[in-house]
Image (cartoon, rainbow, N blue to C red):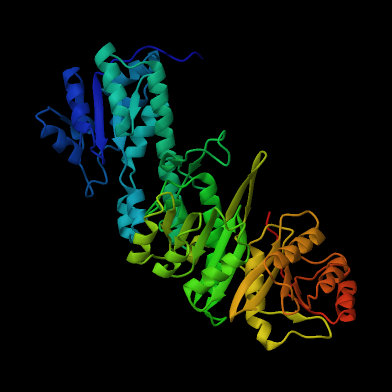
Length: 528
């Protein structure tokens, strides 16, 4: 059946809004157009206060407001006035018999449930902010967009007023566009309620809620020819963070800052148990190129930077503690894109203020942000998995030679850092001046042997010529003994890996032949 594409004159309008932004201008425009305005509750009082006549909604429904306003517009009369087909003989006849007069326009935005949810309100407040009558009117009007216009956002009023003033009607295309936004609005509203109820009940929601209307447009995506946005769904998060200094964050800044924040969170988790008080991680292209645990923030920064001074140029740095003037002074002659920390001292901010393009972010290390699933788009669908929050504390000895108790701190630190490298990942960590630091890493290679070679080369490049006290960590098992033989060639005598290969015995034998200590974690940490 062909849709009715006629132009619609607005003779009767029903206005019921929580957000009264712009409603004064809209009501005046409708009044000047000769439109009868129907309204209830606070909206009716507001419009009457403008000196504009209003038909009370109870004159249409035949019933007063009831139950503290829970019942106002829900009625057979209102829904019928919105839903009946104006070119259908049977509908027209039945409407006349029932005394139903058409309503041509619905202007409605809903109770502020999202605000109540963001304020972590109690159940009774959440419930009272669930709109029932509003979505009913909006959906009825949007369904019948051939004959009814509906607006749900004050930003729509301007175009509507201009069209009505210029043409004395609203076109079919405008009504269809408004209907589309109306259905999006109610879908987002219901989705927010569902999400909040599941979270409030400590249950995992069987749906994905992403509100693109709140998305922030970025300058561009991963590359200049790609458009991009960022959508925030949690407070006190990276997606919500605004730089306290510097330019806006780019897509790549956010990607790297996220990698830095995640690694910093894990380092913070193990910091106390390893006997350290400060942590620092340096990220380049989503990989740690430097990381350290130390006994003060400056030492952590110095050791992290020493892990790869070349790659640290143009990097993103995350601290697990407050950044002070000492760190700001040390970084004064170095180019860094972004610095994240729980806080900055005033004198540190004053020092950083001289570097106008440096972005500073205050961001708490909150593990709650890791409870949501990780989602990745693939061709034609999505991959969804739990976050990898596991941190190994138990290590299974496999070789004749054992790790010493003194290596426990270094083992814990090394496993954390390796977890955040792209697979295939190999890291070399060492204890220097009573600090744990990453001295070399190989990552992102399809061949694990190549990653081991890169890690060793980087350690040598950083001035570490004696690797006998260094610990080598692999994110996944060694399929052959070649990595063990290579490690032995360079004097590496301590190895950590998950185990699980069909050739584990061959690898263990290679370690025993070369007097190497090796432990299994039993847990793989692939990262693609």
